[in-house]
Amino acid sequence: MSIIYFLITISIIIAIVFLITFILAVRSGQFDDDYTPSVRMLFDDELKKTKTK
Image (cartoon, rainbow, N blue to C red; front, side, top):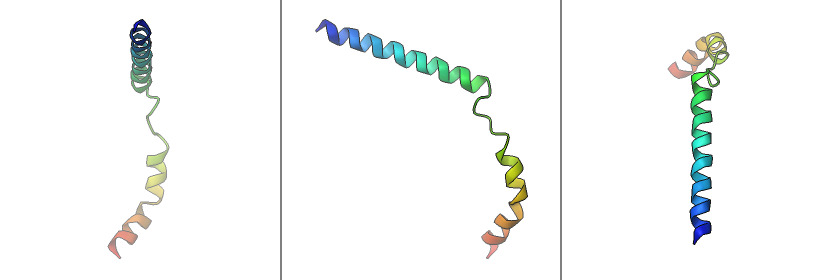
């Protein structure tokens, strides 16, 4: 029975580490997309033409 408590404790610690890592990555701008808006601007006219047809 003590092994279950040990495994639950370890899994909670790992989950907290992943959560902290994810929060730090989001705050540092790791997931900001700077490339797509510039490319989308180039193909914006083609998208509007296909939607109106």
